[in-house]
Image (cartoon, rainbow, N blue to C red; front, side):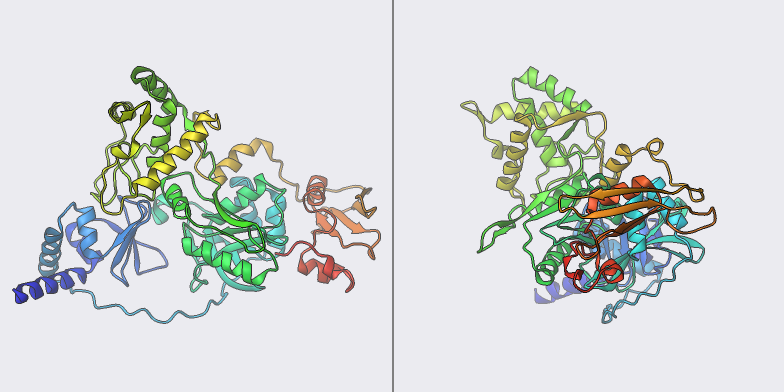
Length: 543
């Protein structure tokens, strides 16, 4: 008996070591090697599937599923454990490819900023301002501070988002600005993190002394939200480059240790999709109170999170009327389970999959699209069956499987139900997914006038005064058509009372700088450049 068990353990070990990439080549399952990274391969049928050859593992990012060679065959070929082991060993033997050796990860080297900058940022500005609709003032100010760069490597122009930490570069996010679906698959453009970038960190900007943190999935989403909310202050904006719980906790720790401030609200500004909803669920029980008063809390900040698709709303209304159940409850369960996903993705971290979703770990075959009317009607029928004295025993509708947290899921349904009952929802034809979608809708191309690059101006001066009687003079200078100088300059009239100096390409940009940041909105670099030693301590914004 012991020998049989040992033989089975040996088979499992050998099957796990069968090279996933070679196996896929042998059976005709198509993977594409990632450009610039010879050890990573991406799925063709599933664009968010990545196989890591060094560790012989995979991760299906859309469904948040990962594993070894056996898990891969079980998931993508719909096999049992024993069947997966047999097909791996048989294919490896017939294909005459060797099993992969155990991979030992080399110690991580420190980050080195090896990127060369172009002499211009014109293409990056065009990408961020014209295509992504980020506010020009934000883009130009971050370029000036060295947090956004333009770089060209092997003929491809990239936008670099430089990660700063305590005054040092510790990483970089690389965003290609030219689409190439053939090369980069469903994403269309290059998206990478620089080699040896600091783990559990990301691109970030601090505005004042951070009392609140905002976490986004990408730098573009981060800058989009900032464009929509230029009034932001006393906060820190962080791009996680994906959904990274460890990044949230690590940056929170760094903020508390490096700044003389307490953090109160952590806003999880992730995408409005199943993965984003599941990510937010992970923080539902986190948070704590400070001994000296106040509390730290995690709050979802998801775009269009209270929006209900119009076609769904009409079905809920009709079915609710037929079965005499609250339409708000039909919508609440649907939202909590799958986030209205027509592809039946699971959108809760409690692992509940009942009426509107299909768990990814059952099979990797293409899911049948959701039949909304059929699913809502089935749910309404089952609601009636668990009705007790005018109330619904919702927990009876959940099948208790391993890892299922029915109690937490029902709490989520009830919280959404309360929101809908209070009328805090909107019905929309289109529910937007991320903050860049929101920014582009808010700021369509026809509403943006690019700043002319060459324009002769005349002289004009305007004075601004605040409630402290501090005066700043804004002058429109005479700039030749070939000059690279800014057209508008703001200077402080009484430098012994305040700090202040701005430069801008247009009156609108100058007015926005003063409106958003005030006269004292200077960063450390500008303080050193323009202020006296006595006034340096008055600076209020640090990036």
